[in-house]
Length: 539
Image 1 (cartoon, one colour):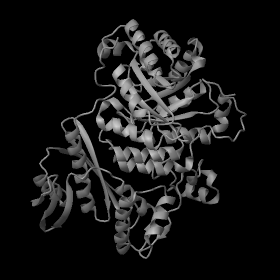
Image 2: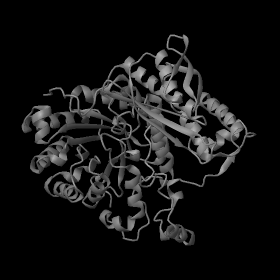
Image 3: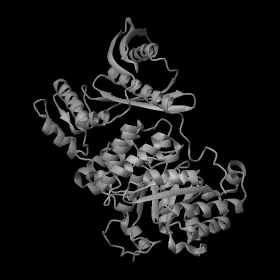
Image 4: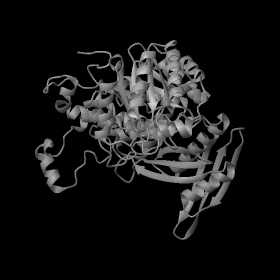
């Protein structure tokens, strides 16, 4: 039976656009966030934490746009993060109001180490702030979530008191964060059990969990929390996030899906019930993973559970033989259950624009006309170079076109000369923000180095290249190559991404893409970080 604190399924709270975006170099612009939010709605997440509206005008705009376009009556709840201050809460409410269903998520730290060194407040002071600010958030919406930051290292008795006060003030969800990824599964499960047993009004709120993967235990911790009464899981696509990341949505969902007979009794269901434990459309998982990977510029490691390139690959002869005879010998999941279909030839150089649009839509990409036109021209160009065009090729083009970075700098030309008996030389033409077209050339240790040196002679923004990665989208010598780079400016990291059959051209566009992100950030100023930046004193 479903109750306020015990819904009849596990709620999935996706924080890819908030905590996930805090990954170094994973900064997303407004249109990219909106693209991901739309896909998260297709995926079937219950709540989208769209951002931290107070952080910057860009964050506010992104949350507001997602509220307007994705927060439909039949869509997910749209949530915004707010520190326990009136100003944060007011601005979050303004950004979220266009949504049909919206939530304010407010937090304050409760561990002694945070109280002493970050907040410089006493326990009674923090209790009073939490009570007042939850009640204040409640004046804007009935859906209020409260998080005691660093709950995993907080004194349990003080944590129980804090949760009781927050629920009494109006919190309908209480989130228990393992902010620093410190706990083990047994400890995390015990923490949730203790809350169930010691917070008198806990039946009036849903217990949620949030955790980081510093020890590689986030998913295990969450599954143990489910067994002890947690009914909302706060996670990210591909597990991206601060430091070692968050609990991975795809691992949690498929863990609950594949082992639902094991988890059914913990939700009061018959052991053999086939009813899904979450509202997620698992066939959208792989598509969502690819989209987030491409837009954030964060590759998924090949051996990553569920969505890694090797997740359904078998090289061992014994394994191959077993799988050919019966898939269940070595596979506990069907690749198609996460939307990973066979890599088939779908279109050719004679295919028209409508066929291309239709296939894109089947793959989950609905591009605006301008982007569609650019993508179709790239498809036709690719079709002249390749005999076989696959779904992965088409997805690479679509994902590249959804890189909505403002083009302050535009690469008009890249030309390279290199060889084992010559010095690599690159010539580039770049259009600058003031409309000038500047050409320059440079010599480098290799063709990509020469291109980057030439671009730096035109684009005078100091930065340090800290990562350069290339991967092939499909097999074959004519495969599309995807290039992802990261550059550092002062203490911030910015990523760039591009795809092309010519790796040098892709490298050049990826670098300009990163420079555009950096330039945009310099124009807008630095945004606040919800956990690192000091919290104002609130009465």
